[in-house]
Structure formats: structure tokens, C-alpha cells
Length: 213
Ligand SMILES: Nc1ncnc2c1ncn2[C@@H]1O[C@H](COP(=O)(O)OP(=O)(O)O)[C@@H](O)[C@H]1O
Ligand SMILES: [Mg+2]
Image (cartoon, rainbow, N blue to C red; front, side, top):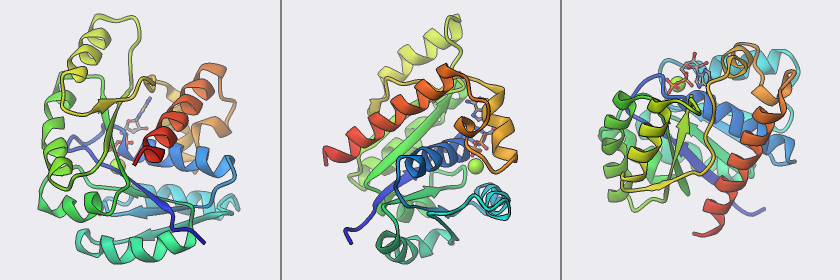
């Protein structure tokens, strides 16, 4: 079997949507017929809580879950890549040397930026580290507030950062928060068409970024 592709989700700012992206990307990939391994390197363990809730509900077929310390990532990913089509690594809110193994392991680094200036300011650290590891990066605006002045300001400013910005924006929707607690992806509830469309579009962009290595 070919080795799985590795997506690391990183952003220094807590609450930017790393775990939300990890979960929803994983669910979208699984729904597209891929096996997915999640690796939680955040001691807070929210990805693990999500996975166990899902597992207990009997909905984790085709999925694997594992945890690792910052320094164990390379070893763990080596195993998971042999088992799954995609490995999704969730990381703690840090941009220091502890993050480097998770970046080094990545075929693509996804950087969520929640719709605030504070999140934007926090982004350079991760971009610097990813550049030093020579990794491909895709930034994703999360909790986007379409049609607001703040939303427009943040998306303009994000274009000036030194990495590619996904065209797709993930909107601020209660469904993202609610589904996480239920061990689900947001599309697995009574998802509205706009939510489905944004996740489909993000998946397509992520696949595109992975194919252009
Ligand atoms: N697009 C979104 N719409 C609504 N709530 C969101 C969205 N993205 C994240 N959240 C909520 O924001 C909080 C922080 O998100 P989380 O994914 O845990 O961030 P991180 O892992 O970066 O700390 C959670 O309560 C989550 O449900
Ligand atoms: Mg998290």
C-alpha cells in the first residue's frame, strides 16, 4: 500500500479551529472512502475526546486514533502512514521547537486563522517554522463573517502573509461547535447546503495542494 499523506494542522493561537478543522477534514476524507488516522499531539486531548465519543457510538470504522508527545511524532506518523490513506495531526497552540517534528512530518501544513486581528498576528510564527522545514502551507480563514467589515479586513490582510490562502472560508456556524461534542463532523448532522459546500470546497483545495508536491 502506498504511504498515506500527512496533514498537520498548526496555529499558535488557541481557539483558532485546529481541532475543528482536523475533525471535519477527517470526516470529509472518510466519507470520500479514504482511511484516516488522527494523531493528537495536544496534551489537552480534545481530538481524542472527539474520537472516543465517535468510537463509542460505533462510528469510527475506517479511522484510527493515536496520541504522541511532540518528539514522538516522526515515529508514530511512520506507523500511521502505513495504515491509512491520510494522517491528520492536531497540535497544541504553540509555535516553538516542539512543533517542528509535526511540521517536518507533514506533506501539507494547514493553518486556520479565526476572523480576528489577534489570530492574524499569531500566524507568522507557524509560517516561519514551516518555511524552515520547507513545508507547503495552506492558510484557511475560519469563523469567517462574510459581509462584515472585520471579515473583509482579515481576508485582505491574510493575503499579505507569506503563504497560500485557501479560497474557501469556513463560516462561523453553531453546527461546528455542536457536532464536535457529539463525536461527529458538521456534515453528519442536519447540515445546511452552504456548510456542505464549504467543506467540499475546502477538501478539493486540500487535495489540490497535496497533489502539487
Ligand atoms: N467555524 C466555526 N464556527 C463556530 N464555532 C467554531 C468554528 N471553529 C471553531 N469553533 C469553536 O471554537 C472553539 C475553538 O475551536 P478549536 O477547534 O477547539 O480550536 P483550537 O483547536 O485551535 O484550539 C470550539 O468551541 C469550536 O467548537
Ligand atoms: Mg485544539
